[in-house]
Image 1 (cartoon, one colour):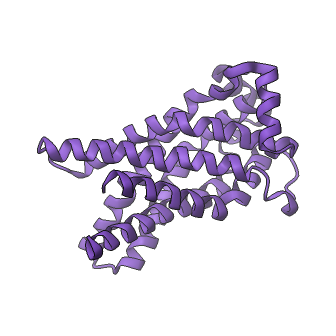
Image 2 (tube, rainbow, N blue to C red):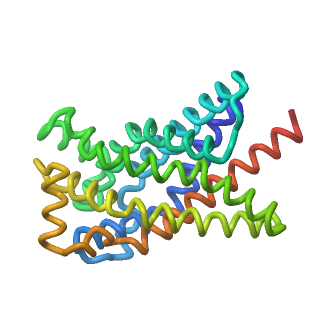
Length: 254
């Protein structure tokens, strides 16, 4: 895809994903932090979550597109392993745009103060450092997740079409389920650690791991897994669906 198509993909997918998953993100936060989940609070974190998805999908898509164009230009073979690697690198880059949105989404989920007020409070209390809190787990989580989203989703979709003769809608649904469940199971411990780091001041990765282990045991790292699996299935489905529609539109009109 071209740069314009990458930008359109990022914005469209971010908007759809925000509307579809905002309530699930709030539910996951309540599970991890052992708080009561209320349906009336499902709107919390809407603006920062959209910003986080823009960082995820638009930055990730631009990075993926740039790497793909470089590989094609220099005649590198686009194997399944290459697609997974490109997706993982794109995820690592996009993490720097994701972590800020997720931090303020957590603040909004916890306090309900709204996006701008939480920005002012965070800057007054912690300065610019608040924007990078939890960046370590986020980078590793997004490298795995985006490798599955951008690479694994496409690879599994093509596999189901070519190997089993699935039609496009069935292949899209099946690959979304497979890639979403795998990415959720692998990345949930990193997600739980990230939430604990961003929810408490002066908590390092080591302290967050010890805190979760001592308070909840090993299963505490998988807290909120159900919500995360549903979120990832929706995200993979959105990214594959929008990507497919953009490619078909471009082929038909350009």
